[in-house]
Length: 232
Ligand SMILES: NC(=O)c1ccc[n+]([C@@H]2O[C@H](COP(=O)([O-])OP(=O)(O)OC[C@H]3O[C@@H](n4cnc5c(N)ncnc54)[C@H](OP(=O)(O)O)[C@@H]3O)[C@@H](O)[C@H]2O)c1
Image 1: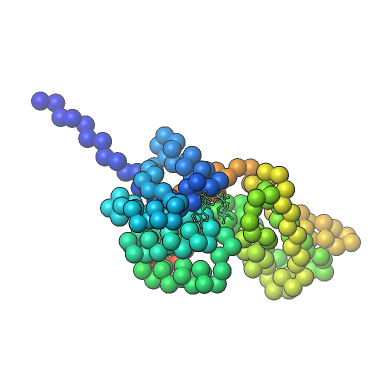
Image 2: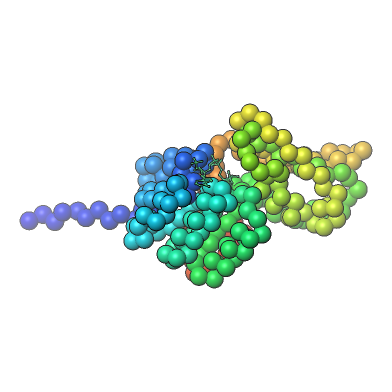
């Protein structure tokens, strides 16, 4: 008798927090592509959806939501010992503390901006040398974005050396359907340097989160970011 070929699924089973949102839609679109390597098994909202999530099915959680839903998703991941990836912005100090506490027990990945390009810019501005010039950081996003300045703008600000941070000005613009543009101008009377990052699609951020989860499922408990994924 001919042996039947066994198809072994190696897809990572994802629980998605913020599934009805714009980013949730982008994550679902990528997961749904052939050979994505992921399958969606649980979704939230509503908040109470977590009570019904099946611990045996979910292998990792991705969260792009709001501080409230983020908290529920993190709690579920911690209680059920699942890797947790979040890109939710506007988190307060207390939320960041929860991430740090959870990372003692589960692998946690957090990035305000899941794009490779922004990560490259962070590395560059880390090394900016002292220069008498004005520094302006522009953050341009769609009109429904809730936080202002963007999480990315605040994160970029932290990456400047302290002399530059002191003179840095942030200007936030909310208009139309912009997925996210960040521009940094260094201006003196003799020269202008402009660094620009433009997200052309939300799929960019969804892709970063899926890449992070694929990497994270093999990691021990800890608090990770792109620094760890790309550099170590
Ligand atoms: N890290 C990155 O690269 C990156 C990139 C883009 C966006 N973001 C961030 O990702 C987050 C989501 O962005 P988005 O544009 O997808 O936002 P959105 O369209 O407003 O979606 C938010 C999602 O969270 C759910 N939600 C929010 N508060 C809730 C609550 N109290 N109870 C139940 N469900 C709740 C919403 O459910 P309903 O549909 O029921 O409202 C929806 O599913 C934001 O923080 C944004 O800044 C991060």
